[in-house]
View 1: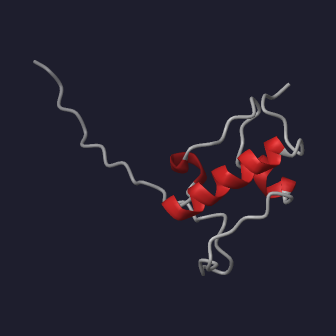
View 2 (view 1 turned 135 degrees about the vertical axis):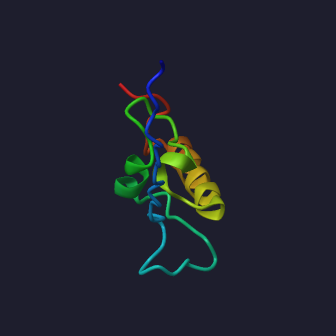
Length: 83
């Protein structure tokens, strides 16, 4: 006889958007490419941009983040690869 499994309920933790200030989305959505503290939190140790799933960013925030990171890389403020 096979024992019955307990029903598992997994709760999804809703992460807060790190770009929002006091719960309000800044308009227009702009992230300063010179803000290296924020941008380094949104990249992993290999230098890759962290996905929306892990950061909790919304779509508009994530687009602004990726633009800012790419600008910072081009201006040689951030490395293209970690190391």
